[in-house]
Length: 109
Image (cartoon, rainbow, N blue to C red):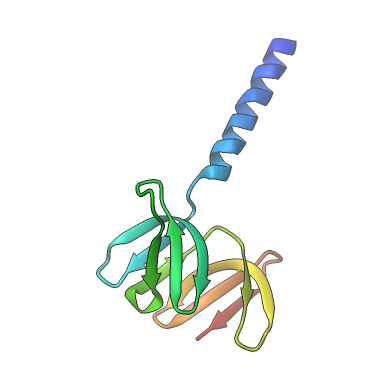
């Protein structure tokens, strides 16, 4: 019984570790290329994303991105100073949807 419990705990911890390190964010560029990885920052018109397939992070200007989808929660500061903790997703061209950790959705232009 103890061996089974140990095996179950080991498998569960391994699965949690794998899912924690999985890349969860996607950028679809204007030319329809897709970059999958972990977004590190979004600042001053540039998104920095880390991928498994490059030793250097990619830096992409907002103008070169047609869609974004994240599973990672970010602390987001809006232009009016409001701070939110949430995920980002392109709702439609030119509009971003923020979904907060408490389920509130906000649409931004």
